[in-house]
Image (tube, rainbow, N blue to C red):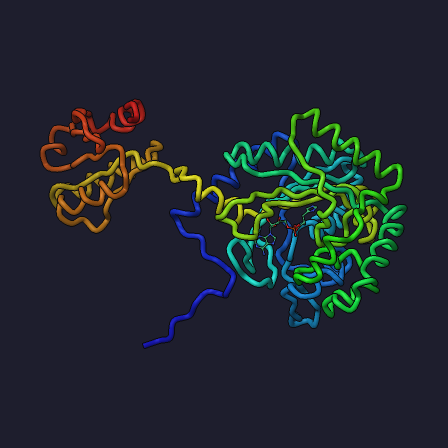
Length: 423
Ligand code: HAM
């Protein structure tokens, strides 16, 4: 016997039955984001490794430990994208989009790859719905994006999600904070993990999102970044809060939100759902402002802000909600005798063309087994086609949930099914 080959660890198949939840979220996001004026961008799944090293940052867990990096046959170092912000910024620069429109709003949807330790809600291939807005320095842009997430969560029926916001300062005030942080961390240098001892010198902010427990305890006691903000960063953060309040969006200021990626300046935010279905993977989305990234990647001096939502996690939450997502089957057509199968097959084809969701058993089989299958599909109606129906051009629509059969002409089936009240 041949040996069975399994899927790659941490990379999931999404089968019919579950995929409808994904399609629902994707459809809802696409419709909503279009209302906000965001257009879809599709970038490749693979990029030059240097793109992520220079944007997400060498000292982050994402780049330092979790990237799927390989050499292609031409000797180039490539990586599967671990996130969507850097690829979108690369495309924005490469296509000189700033010359076409000064305020650009993009969204994307697709798989990302991180070699992470797996658990509920944390995978090695996962999916993000993200959005990025380029060209506006204003707090209104930050809040527009948060509003878009809030409206999406509402439309999905996910109301138990809280918004946490923070400011990470900018090049004027971050060094002051960094100095205070280093002073605090130096006091515990011997207790930090090996990575963090290195980060203490190269990128001390990244110590704050280390996953090692002792490092987390030390980070908890670190000074708050909010106390070090310069006046313009403080004013920006105040205005973000004022605008959120004006839109009736509930939020919490949380100085511990550091985001784990290097490119952020000023506003940072996370959407957190404390739900058992997610285990400890409770962050359903995060984002923030990154005013220096586009220029840092060789592009124009254009400010930007965006977010990424974990689609896998949203779907886990929706699965728990007990809602039904699959399109209901309108009709099951069963064949009573072999002589009717061609007519039944044509009828099914025509009804599908007319827009009905029709189930039909191509294997034929006994009427009893077909009716059993009709039951299983959850079809609203069943129609049995035999010699009598063929000859009269008339059949009975049997409501599967009970009730009187409806007599119908074969060329009227689609209309009658569509007009029949659903129970
Ligand atoms: P991130 O916080 O690294 O941000 O990821 C965003 C979301 O993706 C997380 O909140 C989480 O829901 C989901 N996610 C991340 N890793 C995994 C995983 N291994 N398994 C399942 N879900 C995961 C970013 O990626 C930024 N690019 C967001 C952004 C856009 N900032 C500005 N613009």
